[in-house]
Image 1 (spheres, rainbow over the protein chains, first blue to last red):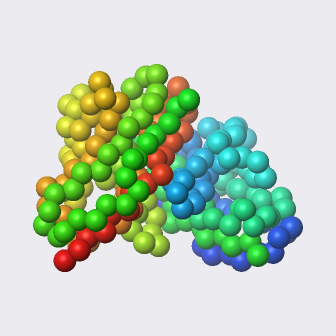
Image 2: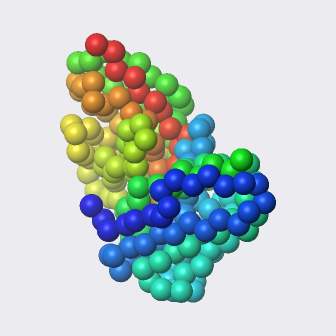
Length: 110
Length: 114
């Protein structure tokens, strides 16, 4: 399995609080992605990175920001969590077309 | 607009029967094509992929998929399903020109009955 970890794996937070999810890789892959998974929608891309400090928006980026200061870490921040951001969040890495996914983080916003 | 469609939300099959899951895409160029499987509470596992060449590709767990350019389809098949194949299946596509960002279909849930 590709060396990808996500932390935390589960989190419950209150509306209006900031939340940061971390994705860590040991593969030295160039690309890193954040997706959210919701019933009936499959996975949708939030943000991605194509290098250190190089990031871009995905399909559902509103309310999220990201940072990548090192090759191995890609952080996803919810500046002020809302109930609509309750979801399962997956990180993925790649050097080319094939992506490898982390175990996911289940986030509940109450 | 670019899109990936999985027409079947839920399929129920008997153990030992064949399975086919449909996937259609709408892209200007032929994308990279993937099928992923997700068991309940688990992450995504890559079943198979198509980049180029032979249009019939073999994957893990006895699955295969066929790329048909004329139909913009990449359907997944298995000749004989096992109870352990009960899961959710996702078709996904990516473009090199788009930094390999994946677009997923909504998924098909497969139930296997004894």
